[in-house]
Length: 449
Ligand code: ADP
Ligand code: ADP
Ligand code: MG
Image 1 (cartoon, helix red, strand yellow):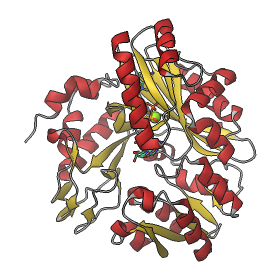
Image 2: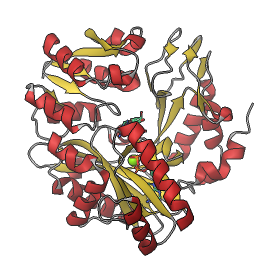
Image 3: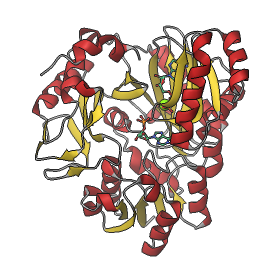
């Protein structure tokens, strides 16, 4: 692989460019007219404007991206996360144009990217899944399934992602309204309103396993990430390892994840997500791409996941076995969002007038912002990720508190104070939290000036 086009923007585009540079690979950035002054454009060897500010006019325009790749002679495309990363049509289009898609094949994305289908595949593979409908259902069919499995139920979009397209129904009277609202949101966000139903597990942990699979059928897992700190089903803070898994559970879930990946002939990096109760775990979905929170796994394993993705896509076998993977210390990631938690988390775009990035032993800041950078209202509000690594969870917490104290982003409103209060919450510190954590403590977490 000599030249990679990065079909993304923001911090993940920068992250991928950095890995390519270290590997001696040329890079091509693509950008919308709103992103002319972005860091990924400056850092890449070449940059091509692919259209208007709206994602639908640029970062989602497959033809424009493929032409940019052909015109610049790129032999591979890295899709990052979001945008076209889980789009099987795009993966196939790259293959048709003799461009390596750094991710799984279109056929695998078709199977696992559709959440209802993925669940059926996992049942076949013998992996435990959340009880629910057999595939997608109409409103009327869904009502029958909900009655069978019992309320509360979760109504989920088969194409959903980023926490969108799902609603809880606590009772039958909430079902119809919830179904319609979730389907409408899914149609607007993903152009697909196919829905499925599953049992709503009350206050579980969200625990996911990182997988790497090469094109020779070798599959390893790189342990778990605990992403239970969520607001409206969207992750805010992630860590590895999880303080609530026993070694036995870790081994069992790790093996189940490898089995799942092998069953679907998975290739490249992927993540298997589970909801976990005290004694059970249930598959919820697989993300067939690199994830936002991949750095916490990198910090405790020493494996550069983006470089591994590139090596796998170049046809190289994995350079290690399961036994070679060892875990060192504890890592936490906090998502830095340009938003105002006190104003119902409304996005806060604008110019960064001053920036101070924390540093020191065990601190990493993955971002695309700089002083004078204007955060655009057109895209996701996540502007960076603060990642720490310590010998123990306790040390990682101390480092994250210290790093958040140092971080200064002037000119916009961000969520660092909320993150700081999470790091001081006694239940969080004890490791006693689940996906209901933010809602339970929201008043105290917003109690800052
Ligand atoms: P992760 O699973 O890596 O933790 P998130 O769920 O936070 O990631 O999503 C990462 C980014 O990708 C966000 O910008 C989110 O809005 C976007 N995203 C995730 N899934 C989809 C999808 N199916 N379609 C469009 N965008 C998505
Ligand atoms: P997305 O594609 O948007 O990431 P997921 O299916 O991964 O959607 O669900 C997002 C979050 O919603 C999970 O991390 C979890 O907190 C919650 N969730 C999903 N399914 C269930 C369930 N059956 N019971 C309880 N919580 C769930
Ligand atoms: Mg998910």
